[in-house]
Amino acid sequence: MPKLKLGAITDGIDTNRFCGPSVISALTALTTGEAARLIREQGGRKRIKGTSTYDVRRALQACSIRMETCPYPGLHPTTGPTLAAWLRMSKKDRTPGRVFLISAGHHWQLVSGRRYTCGRIREIVSIRDKRVKRRARVRAVYELTSNNVTKPDIDVTKPPKPKTNPAYYGVRKLIKKYPEFDLTCEKDDIAHWVTMSKELEELATELNHPLGDEHYCYCIEEVWDRLKEMVEFGKEHQ
Image 1: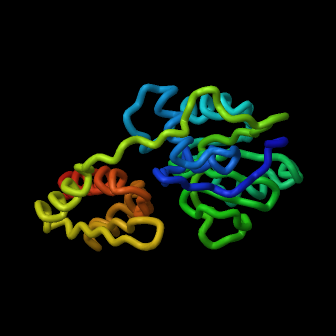
Image 2: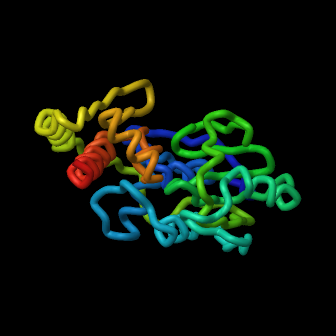
């Protein structure tokens, strides 16, 4: 693969919908499942739900991609500039060919010029696309560079053998056990939409709690974890 450029997020046999493997796939020849296996092999983890800066940096390094911190002013997970504000701030920097990795709203996303992609949207769109969460607070920004993107030395081509997934049982159990929280899970073509009762949703929004804006889940394990968070939130505010 030649110099770094923004490409399509590619899914294989064992798709991974989380944002870390998705951005790695968009920058390399790896599928999301292969990117997730790379992170697992490097960190000795059994499954990938979320990824730290260290996880992403190490996986990118394995593909000959450098990740340099960009010192934009005021970056912070709760008080930093919104993504919309950062896009205005970085307008002169976002010249053709430069690729930026952004951590905003507990989500990894890629911007190059006026092009955008992430594991939630899963295609290259304009930064003005309505699906881009422009109000998310920017925690950190990194510029990515490479003279020659390569495949990692670790063999990530073999998908794991399928196993019975306990997450399906866990999701059903939580919904049945806590009817007072009105937990729901609906699946569309690419994701699950998870909600709690109208009262709890409004309270989460009022308190600026992450659950007020975190409804999409891209695998059943993420649904299970999100419902657990909603149950804890409901118990805390009963």
